[in-house]
Length: 467
Image (tube, rainbow, N blue to C red; front, side, top):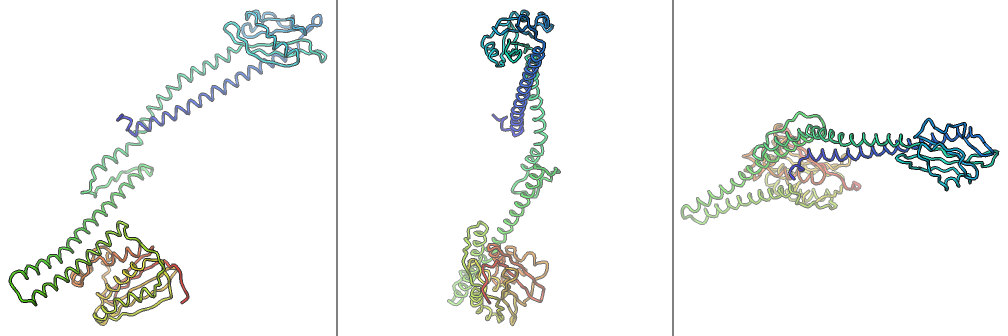
């Protein structure tokens, strides 16, 4: 049923169903409470009248009677009657003739003569009476029985009127509540309809649009705001993906173009062995560059997908730094750059050794590339506020302030021509940032033109040994 798919209708139906149950329970409670109170009131009225009659009972020939005290023609004729029995069960007074003569209940009479009080309901013609039978005592002895009855018709009429009112009011209330609930549900859900229509206009090709709905700070308003925030994040993700794809294509096209050019030149005419070796040397260098680039791209792609497992093992930081320094030392010597170590305390980290080593090598290699001949690169660490601060500093050319916020972006180069010539693709620092975050840490950079650059990595400490 298509109509049932409407959230507005479903909300209305649930609302009406719940209201129907509540009103039914409320009505039943009112009816039962009133019924109980009315019948209790009737019993109290009979009891009070019986007490009054007991006080005015007179005796004739030793038998109790109300003759001459209570008229045989009761002024409440048709609504009540009184009957008196002597100790033998003989009727000495009875004004129930107007009711057609109420039958005598021998069991109630016997119980009353035995000292018990009994109540029962009697139906005479079209009327129902509540009857109370109790003992008449004289000088501590049972001298007879008094029977007092009152009609239940007033109570029944009141209850029937109440049922009629409830029977009419119940469906009318539900009908009004249905229309009101349907209207209010429509008003409450109208912003969602607007949100749906606007959302349909937004596509993957154009994520610049926003809902910008002016709604109060309620569930729907927060939904619209969250939707706008989600679209903004998607827009940023798509933008970065497009930039990443374009930059990756450009980076891959450059070595491929170089390889293609070298091969075409080599095939243009017959040459000696030496020129062919030179071409193969250039091609080999470009292939190495492509391998590094593809490897970095694969690392970042797997990192984004959460497919790189992070090992948790005890790492001795001094030994790790020493291994990184040993690996980059030959390259530093070749560039005539001094590599200085500032050791800190003995520290143990819970981390992935290979990834931390890659982070250190990336930072050291980056520092060596941008430090001029006879410059200096310093690596060291310290423990500050329960964290390890690992730094790599150089006194190279430095980074301009406008470039600092972007140095960790993928494919971002401060000096594009120089970076490409050095074999960089602008991915090393992005990988460093991911490694730091993957270990619950962070990485930051400080730099000034002509004064050098300092990268600081902060990592949580697993345990600290004595220095």
